[in-house]
Length: 103
Image 1 (cartoon, rainbow, N blue to C red):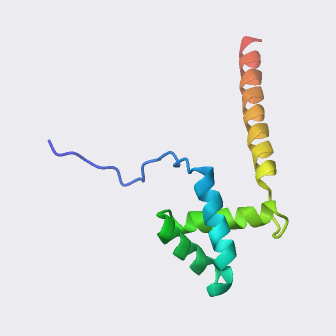
Image 2 (cartoon, rainbow, N blue to C red):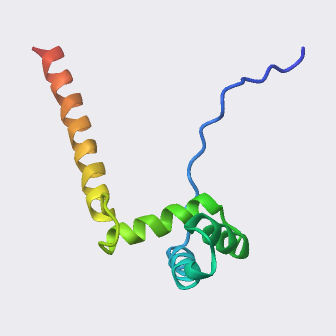
């Protein structure tokens, strides 16, 4: 019997990137940004050099700029707080559902 493949993309866990590699990528893009026509071009060059995805490098640089106050957006610290609060809300909603079912 032939195997049937689903057309949906399989969900994969994101890779854990070494923080030193991420910091190096951000530093390299920042140092050499003036040599390229855009952030995307600089990110692509550094990504190729380090063997990581260009979009990942571009996002890391943007997040570093946000964290440093050089760009508007949600800081890494705020993102962690949001993630923690969403998790807490989810647990409380589950607890409420259990209590309602028991009542």
